[in-house]
Image 1 (cartoon, rainbow, N blue to C red):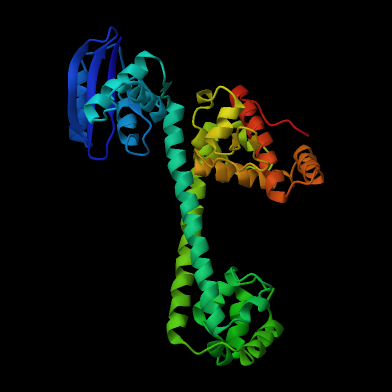
Image 2: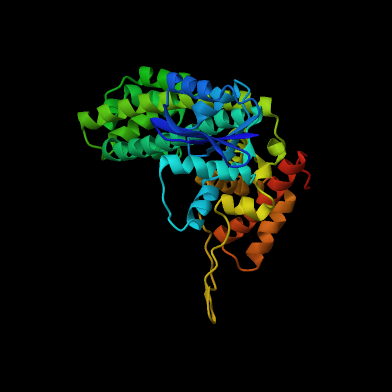
Length: 385
């Protein structure tokens, strides 16, 4: 067996080749993060038939190289950076260079501290990027909604009451695209206003509603501010675009999830989007030997503070590991207490013990992680009544 260690960077990677007895066959050499550089790597290692390529899981910089090598049937191992850091710390001189890191990666391969890349892992990489991007898009969409509300507080603060507290409807967006202030609604023709409301609300907002809106606009304290009206029109266009783009992302996520066919979707309250975030962040459940390690990876494990006779009464979660996994599990925990009797009773039990809503929900998260670990490990559907 020949071991090939690759240290990943943004523009230039380093690789070295070592035999199973620790003899350096090819000294560390650089190659660019480009097709030309990848081909240089292949030329250096193509004569080694029984080889294992190892690299650290360092964000997205390794994704292109992993897929390039996987398509050429190379055996690839991904190593947790914590493993190489521990080997580095065990040395007297804690030196870190690209060349030395390739040798540390090889040591991890020899010690079998890695997980092999499969076709499922390649799908998970795609799914993880989509899931993270979707969350970022939703967060940006939320910020724009907040900006829109702030603008309407200036030109027509009473409008939110007309739409029963929800400004983010198709009918309200259509209205604001054409009439972006109380003044413009006051000056609008009643027949045109009626048609706009009626056609964009499936008939829910009729002529009577249009008259109510006109009267509301007449008594509004909103200012006449053309610059804010322009902002509103721009924000509405952005919101429509985000809605379309998020819908496209959702379709791609659903397609990948159907290919992967994970039992995560059998958990009540788990949608394609939340399910994709959970399984893509976990990647291979075999990386975790027990539910506690998965809980720690999600950053939902408690931080213990104890010194001498002092023992903290209240403990917070660590919030280490994957922020995205923690977010998804927390969201599912919130949903599952309304969709499953077992989790609902567990949540109410914690509340009856005097726990706050947030603390009780953290207990639900803990129980949920154990369930997720079980169904993914055994590849079985959720079965808690």
